[in-house]
Image 1 (cartoon, rainbow, N blue to C red):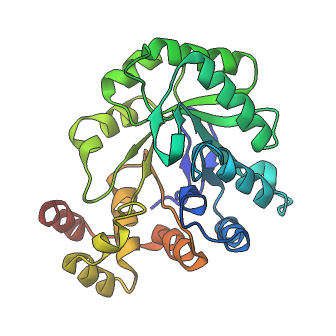
Image 2: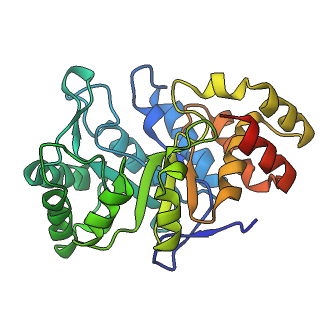
Image 3: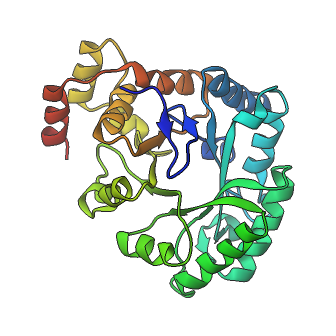
Length: 288
């Protein structure tokens, strides 16, 4: 398996597994030292892509927590310019709830604050967190295109979208990435054609929750087939799940979350797991 993956239509090469930083800032988050250790461990393990969002926080009084944390972590690295940061806008967190607001005004306000919280003049990848049923998608993407023209963001990505959404967005601007929930147990983006569309259009498919997400990872890893394969390959069930995604398509870029250094150390080792065609087939057919 190739050890690096090219990001979208660019020539930028990424270590094939990114870090989903969300668990470091939600309710029950680790203390700051532990959170910074997780990011440091990831970067020291050759990781060079971190996914964050303004709403990775406890509630609307805490917006930007994850971005500020990532920015602090990067000050410890001499090669910080080679670490690529993606963030998102288009949601709000009133009283800890998750609500959509992809209005142009809120996207602009969110982007401006993210620039401050990330301590940067230009955000590498800014992703629409979700389409807003109350706002035409063309309006949301149009505002991101304006922010790109102004140099405040360098690349535009989408999250939680369908093929129809991607096609509409592409009529407004270049799209470098699509981020949807995707794992061995959640295959909607395979079944509805999103992954295939990304493959055919030089768009990186960022698979969030690749081992089940914040609330389901332990349950998923307890699957008997995964435990048997982990024993066979002398690895963990989590690595098997990530390796499955890496083998499915060269366009797929998994971003496992972690709140412990041991978790991210384990996840990034999935690049070394070479699943056989037979075992890929077994996983394909026996896990639904």
